[in-house]
Image (cartoon, rainbow, N blue to C red; front, top):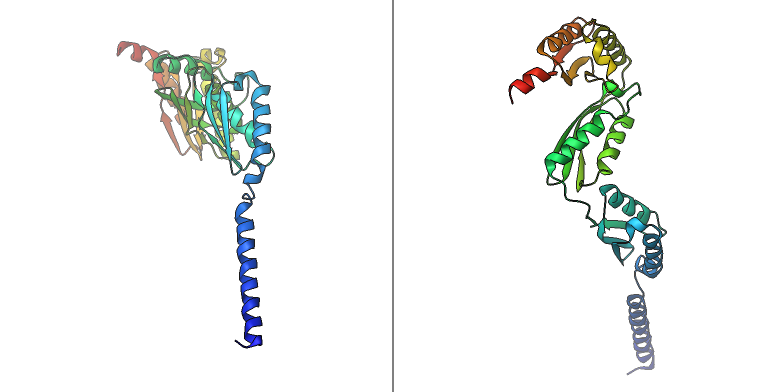
Length: 262
């Protein structure tokens, strides 16, 4: 073989060898995310031992993703531990498989307790009569629906649900009502004519105000429980007399009718 050909073959062999060695070297190195796993494990372990409510939570780390297992007492604790771990340096994500190990409470009992708490939530705040929430509980999973005047009302109701023992999971279907000066005017007018009525004024003494006034793009709806069918009819007539409302839906429930149907 000619000397030049031998030299060229030698050079090709050397280049191929270097490429092979480089490939082996790169393969031996951990993935960019995985190289932080050991330090993440240390930080996660430290964070879980800081708070007693996390002592039954376990973790595993792979490629920067932290998987949480174990149990906590409250659903809010499950949210909190994922949030705390997610803030740690180099953590790329959190897979939250933590279970709720709090006391076993029947769906009916849980719904009753939550209804009472949410009914009196934000008492004294101006938006209290303009929020209306619904509850459904199935196997400890709470679905919160309804309409809220703003984010604060929804978030406050959600916080109550998430911090209540027995809740296993939470689904929020609450609609935030659109911001509207026109709708706000209708709300104020509805408050005046309903709670200013000589018959209905007694409901103003309830700090939670059982007649909930929901206005959505000019459409007015009434929710809640009143003492009699007559009170429901009077509230409906007063609401229908408000100028500017595109429609009025009277969804009030008469307590006397509900008891009669039981």
